[in-house]
Image (cartoon, rainbow, N blue to C red; front, side):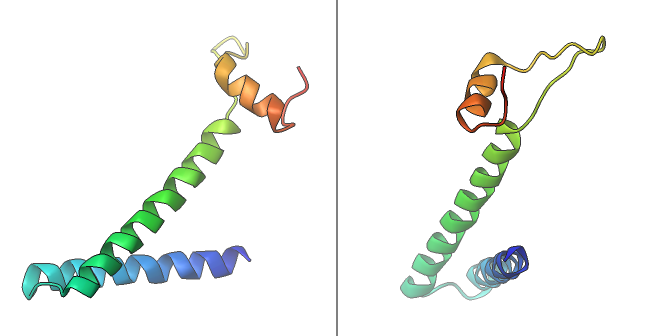
Length: 85
């Protein structure tokens, strides 16, 4: 399943780049402009989702080995069942 998502993401990026190049050279039709907006929004939404997931599973430790993960993140982790404290 992840391979399929990776392929879709690569295809989305390829198409975004194609449209960006065309916009710089000859311009876009209205349909292409709308497609570009839709693709960019989907790409950014996916990026934000992945980034949020990384942050929510992050645990931070100081040099002494004491956990200093922000409480807001700890609460999210508790709600998701990632922590027991």
